[in-house]
Image 1 (cartoon, rainbow, N blue to C red):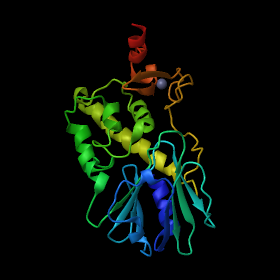
Image 2 (spheres, helix red, strand yellow):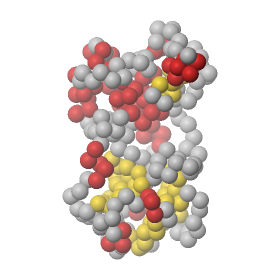
Image 3 (cartoon, protein in one colour):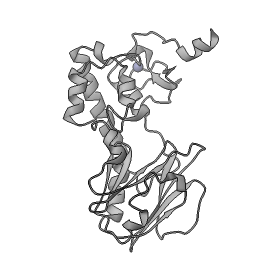
Image 4 (cartoon, rainbow, N blue to C red):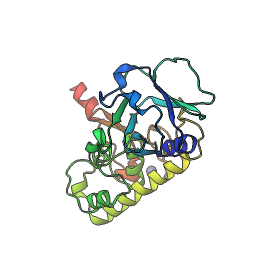
Length: 271
Ligand SMILES: [Zn+2]
């Protein structure tokens, strides 16, 4: 999202909004101000907060949250088609248009128009992963939840997500079941460094993209979704374990002292 926001800023920064074509009405989560009120406004900045794209119109802001299957097309020249899954098309004076869309049956992409000074859903987001506030939580916090759960919780830290959570635990050599409160200082330092390194690396890769956010994102995770393949660090077979309706990929050799974790969801079904 960060890299996408940077690209959109480079295409669209300073342009005025010509049209906002809502193609999926349920996606609009706010009633006031009306989307039309933004027409003619200059787009000052495109940024990101958590997993939200933030379009700043010099006071009022528009947020777009793409669900898991959400994508953005950059249309140059702008189109008038209505492809399947289309959510909203924004057209700008003399610039490419952007079309946000989503795939799959889960309709979860959202659009918010916020009046000046209001944060809407951003209010509930935790600090960014590279902030001092989050560093303090990792290094000193006594949160008793699993590290993986903490990293996925947008109210605790914004914008990490489960794929990078898998890679962060692997990089920090922590078990998928490790809880923050139980970690000693060296593990916490390792964890904090791993968060920074994994996210920096991801941003670097994403910055090499051009245009929108394509349907096939490719896969540059180190371990996430790569179970059965060799661990890039030690060569052991990567495993997966399910809990809380999530699947975590891990390396038994690097992360659990060789122990294969029991798949709790599966064993519950068997029992
Ligand atoms: Zn390994």
